[in-house]
Length: 404
Ligand SMILES: [Zn+2]
Image (cartoon, rainbow, N blue to C red; front, side, top):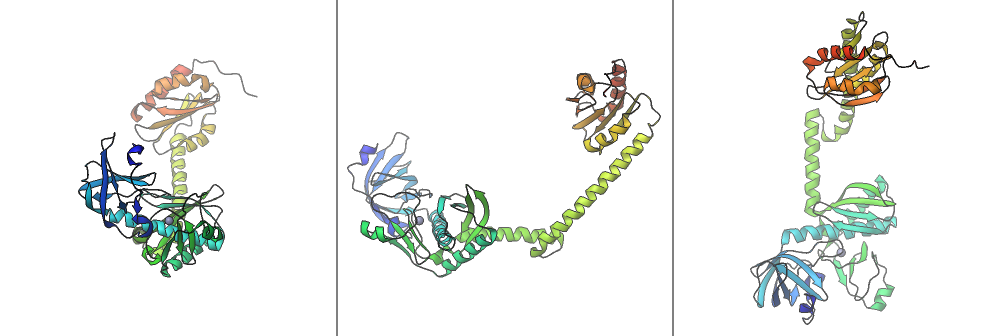
């Protein structure tokens, strides 16, 4: 396949110097069928970016052929389509919305990374332009305050509306130039210079001026490999995301009857009162359980607590006392269909008897000698009958050796 393009002249890369040229005329030099059923189309000049440096390839049209992929093979840019293109002149167009979105993010990344480098001395060690956000990895940590300051300074650089210059320096000029680069470069190096903000080696298309980036925002950050992984949005998407968040905060504020900025404080209060209510509820449930069990105080066989709202914590706490002087204490709680049990005994080795208990309760579980727990398969209404069956079965079991 690669041999097919060997004799073709290098493709003129319009995207390298004119990022905003998205409609263009070109000559179709070759159109050949590929093994995967697609046609490979080569032009004399193209605005289709073939992908690279963390940015995806462009899609669009060459004449009537929809281009689904572009890649660089040697010096030639190859475009792929399901339909063949006619050799000769063709009107071509790059998918505008997607390319502008990518350039807003990509150029925004230059402005932000250049700012972080200039003001905080950190390198960009990784960049990926995804479909939802851009990730930027930095060589060192940034505090929340530093991050906010970097965002402010980057937006200040956007407002300066600097021209984005594309330079192709000679080896000598390059040796005198200070620029950011993620890897060792060979051949002609392309430098992207943005005023005093950034000088960086890069292969991708960019906007013409920083003002076109519109806005830069860091939506989240996390420590990553000794530095940070930052999630950035720029341009139209930054505004949209901030609007989405604004709306969410406004809706939360309306539910809490406070202004959007007061939501965190209101949620803090709500959470405290929710926790308090939870503690009160637990105390009430515990009290109800004790009342239910007080009716069984005189029993000498076993004690049974059946209450949906109880839980393992309550059962464990009450169980210690309730298991004294009887063969066992059994608590069944939870929702019908997902019932649980806790069983305690001072007289039986429940760890060994668990299969028999599980068999009667239709569930699964286990534990140690004096305490087992697990699931219950029988419906709530049958639990009382099951407990009697368990007693009948276990009362014949020998008592374990006394624990000293
Ligand atoms: Zn770039």
